[in-house]
Image 1: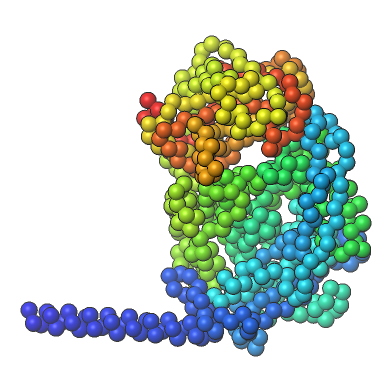
Image 2 (image 1 turned 135 degrees about the vertical axis):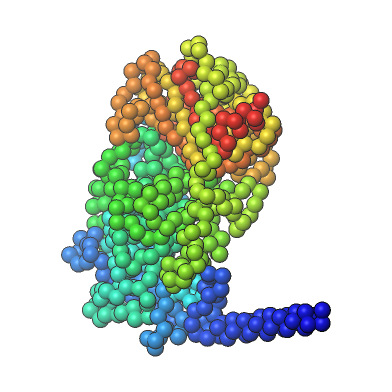
Length: 617
């Protein structure tokens, strides 16, 4: 007994000594001018913490293109923030890089800047839009202060660059053109040792990234999240990992939907040419050429606001078409209720990267636009692929979903997205849609037809909350007795006829009763949405005028979602025509007839049909 107590005492003493030694070692590491790691993450190094000792400088990196027509290769303005300990050439560190068209300022919100949406489908806008000018802001050598306080103390160098034709970067914006992929590629090549860096925009004095390991990671939100994907499609060697947040991965999917001219949420009437004007902050003496060549030439000749069809212009601005050389490790982030850059943008690239066998993870939260993953996730990702620390992050669950009542830094892990336990459940429409028809598991036998009348003066919310309306058709499930988990992509299939050659067609999946509480969560009312042009029932690349009265089969996907619909709610499928927040505004009166036994909503439900029936019967 005494020997056992003595042995236990010595083991305890040994543990205490070891713990104290570990603490002392960690403190010592934190004061050394070298990165160190704990739990697979780069830790704060005391020697790197003082911002007054950081070295901040700027330069210009020469690209492989000339987009401003001056006969010289465009150079990108780049700024660097690094610990002073990298100056002697002995300490080399990896890079976290963010590039943007926004750093030097953007155009103001002026009346007439957006396209006028008050016109018939297929018609030209009634009057031309106004073209604002951007007043460039900012000062050298600082392009941006983003990321630096988070990552420089942890042993990363942070690099920023302005996109072509913005700030002090030469060239022209193209809003998704190839130069927006090649510009960050050139910067990454410089960071990896290429001799294409200069101290001035036009001089010949060279500058080298002697402090770089050549391992580069990229991140950013919205447009700044799009550009890491653009860079990765080039297959540039130095780009090891990217963390895009709410990225726009296809300008067609941003400004169109299944053949329909559809604005991004909050920006009614915006299009590629509007965004061009919004970011065009580059050299004033180059703007006339850029405007003529790109905005009034390539862009206006390509966007086709009359038909909304997918064409070569849009295909060239769809990064899914350029994934062949993509090899960077991908941690994707998005909000399920982002109605600006919608969640399909992230899923389509994640799905393709996963199919290519790349290291991938996806983080979805329940909020709107923006929202980066928790720091721990980002740190592990960059530590693994930029420092080559074997922390096993590539073996972690692929999917991380923030549940409805959780904070964004507390996601729940799942094997993948969509949830592998979700299977497709087909629901059919029962008559009574002008008040509230039914969503049912049995297909109706009768060929019942119901009609809705377009009137854009009513908002989607107005229609969803109306007890009765001729301007929408609404079909609801029984009241849920249990929570129901939807995970994946819902799809709609309808047989419809229109009394005119063209019509908007909009679909909202809603949770009812609608909450009117001003403090209602973003998840409480709208589950997911989708829009389509019936003229494109065969292909988004070729719409054909509808023959009035003829029925057409139209099928399309709604936006990805992962949401638990609580017990006590009803799931409602709302069909209507013009969506006041997103579509063109034709005159009221267009009639759309739905044949109910030819209409199906397919929901991806965790537990499948058994779970649905258990929750509704």
